[in-house]
Image 1 (cartoon, rainbow, N blue to C red):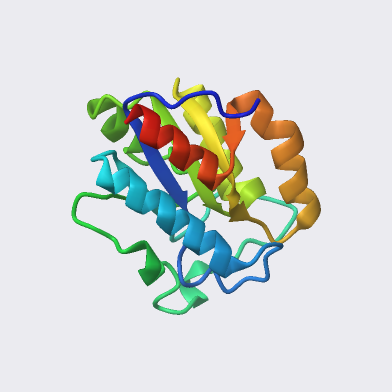
Image 2 (spheres, one colour):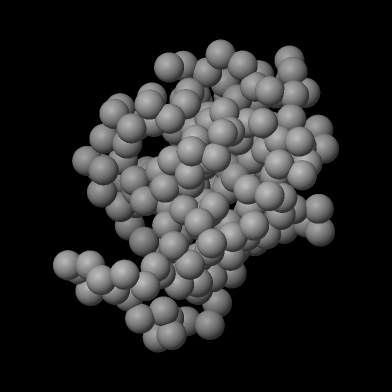
Length: 187
């Protein structure tokens, strides 16, 4: 469903735009993805709306058929947020150990304590961190909006599948300009 509205208390969640991940080869220009995330961040901050910046420093402990990445072997700055996000003291910084930003973190409680009823989600990767965060937000009772031009994935088929088949079941989708336009009207 296309974006219809934003609640007066909407938060922005930016997933995994960190130094060690933005170097991966993604489907869309990483510069454009970062620029669109930055535009959303600036608009949310200007309206006094919560901004949650998420990074990942580990992985869930369960067995999988694919080898898990040894996080201890990664560069020291792997989890550092890209400087373009301009981390501010007012931002909510979430460090996760799994795909979704809500699992094993206090993000749900922090957003609900602020009266947040809706979240806009963007970042990398569409079919993992972004999708898992959107699923968890939906399951936790938030209205979900996905900024589909402010995200990307290393696999085009995964990116497209999430946008076409998964996201419409979790909330509404819109481009950065649509979201910015709705922010001007509501907040």
